[in-house]
Image (cartoon, rainbow, N blue to C red):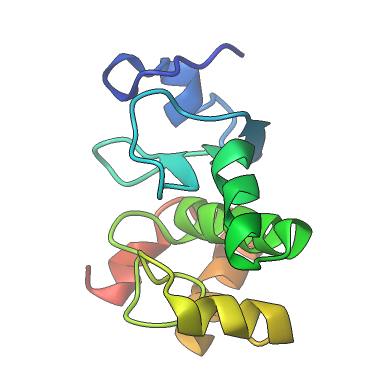
Length: 142
């Protein structure tokens, strides 16, 4: 599968592979067209569905200068982007791992291993994984 590095030229395969049963995540050096504080992107179609996400290792590695452990942060960024694929559109939250912009508090929680998904997010992701449900956010009312 070949995915474009430009958001406006996404390959159909990046948005909705034919079987829908697999999620794909690529770790790439960086994304050319996004601000430096963006660590990843999930490719979702207009219907909120998607199976492809990219994580930008260069942006994550840059956080080492502020004391972030690169491997710990990379794992959390991967979890965040997979969360988008499993939760669908409008899945950012006011707190936790799905917060849209991580602040010092989130970085500290990462370090202590206490930055998690909210319980309702966990239930929706489990439902998607167990049943193959492709659009769980409909039950969130979003």
